[in-house]
Image 1 (cartoon, rainbow, N blue to C red):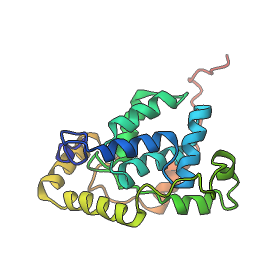
Image 2 (cartoon, rainbow, N blue to C red; image 1 turned 45 degrees about the vertical axis):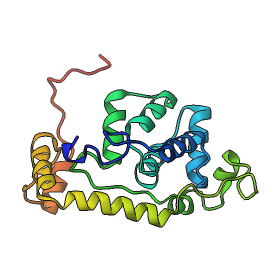
Image 3 (tube, rainbow, N blue to C red; image 1 turned 180 degrees about the vertical axis):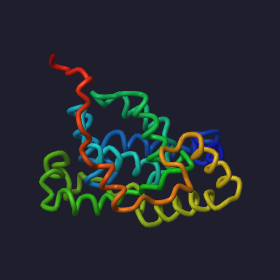
Length: 207
């Protein structure tokens, strides 16, 4: 984690107001007023499973739209996933929340995801049958305002020299791609994908 993001969100050394607890509760219960978010959360609670893109959207929504620190949403999700693995889970929570200092901010639009992955609304209708009725809640936050505020806070932080210096140090120590390497050519990429001859000295798993 990047230390320059400490205290960025309520709950991380910053007083958490009741509104943040209300947002967390609504997110956990699948009643945020965002149909695809709520459908995904309800499926997860009922089955213990959700595909990777929708997991990422749930975390993105909690982190950026609701401005929640990753710890409590992460604890809740950890209790839901049948395939929970801490080494993957917590690093993904931090990355998707924009707190690693080096990863691109991935802010998912629930409406865009719904158009692309549930265009006829069948998935939402299955898990949120009250959608479109008076029983379904209004959106818990206004999307454009919430995302704009999140971007201003995070991109503003990333623009500081202290944050950039820390990001460079993190990249050098932990990054999977070292900065400054020249881009590989098309032929180099093709050669890398070429099938290598089998080493006859290598044993078989099935011998």
